[in-house]
Structures are given as C-alpha cells and as structure tokens.
Image 1 (cartoon, rainbow, N blue to C red):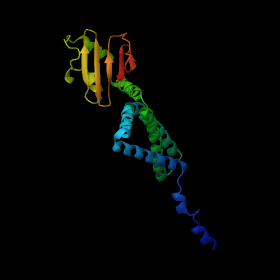
Image 2 (image 1 turned 180 degrees about the vertical axis):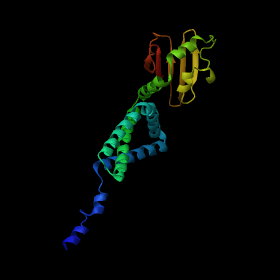
Image 3 (image 1 turned 30 degrees about the vertical axis):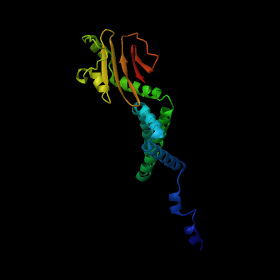
Image 4 (image 1 turned 120 degrees about the vertical axis):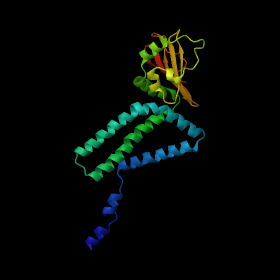
Length: 226
C-alpha cells in the first residue's frame, strides 16, 4: 500500500519533478514572452511600432560592437564553467540554451529600452562611434580631401567609386559623400526616414558642432546623428 501511494503521489512523482521549472527557467520563459510582445508591437505598427523600431535602430550598432560581444563572453564563460563541472550532454545543452536566452535576452532588453528613451540619437551615436573607430581612417580621408580639385558646389555628392577606401568599407546603407577641399572637410552620411547619421572629418582643431548629437572620434573628426 505504501509503495502504491509513493508511486502515485503527485508531488513526489518523477514526471512532476521533470515538469517543475526552476527560477532561471521561468526567467528565460518571461524573456521569450517579452520579446514576442515586442515583435508583435513592431508588426502592429502605429505609434507603438514606430517607437519600438526607433529604439531597435538606435541600439543596432551598440549591439553589434559592444553589447553583443559582452553577452557572448558572459555566455561562453557560463558554458565553460558547466563543461568543467562535468555535466552530461543533455543537461549541458539545456543549460546552454537557457543561459543564452537569459544573457543575450537580458542585455538586449536593457539596450533596447535605453535606446527607446528619447533622445535615441545618443545611443545611436555611441554605437556609431564604435563603427567609425573600426572602419574609418581619418588621415586617409584628409589626404584624399587635400588632393581633390576644388568644386564650385561643395555639397555636390561624389561617386562612390571615387571615395576613400575606408569610407567605402564604412558604408552600410549606401551613403553620400561631399567634400570641401578649401576647408579640408569631408562629410559622409547615411539615413532614412528615422534620421540621418554620419562622419565629419575636418581640419585638426575644428570644434564639434553644438546642434547635433556628435561624439569626437579624434581631433577634428566626429560622428553624429540628427
């Protein structure tokens, strides 16, 4: 009788133990649900979809160059710890999946939320700074500007095949380049209906403009969003 009662107990059965969800499991599930709601808001459109999309766009470069690598390092460290702990493959796979959702999902939500709070241009410029730091060669751009023949219209777009190599590498959405050889100023910009952003390379000592969200890349060069 005792054996039958033990095997039929709802609270002690192996099946119930498997169905129990840990606190971290519930947290991972909550993150998945939150992302599902956010994606639904994006698809729904309207003012909610607009706000969410602007936040997503504003956080994109920071996610690629800063938050993403940080999350990858944290997740890899957790998985390595589980491997050295001698967990079996099935348990290791579940832990890696759950920890991936928690680490990447949490960092992504924090970044997306911060970028959604106006002005999102601050977050975008911070991420774009990393992008420019990786791809832009300021001295190459200055040398290219100094070697150009002055044009009567300094706002005339220059064909992409005549850009400096680093600007061709830097472009994401095509972009436009203008050059003022007299002032040794090159402006590279991209954009869409949600704003414009880019890189300005001027003569050393040129101050940052006060009318846009600009971040200094190096002396006389800065990234910006407007």
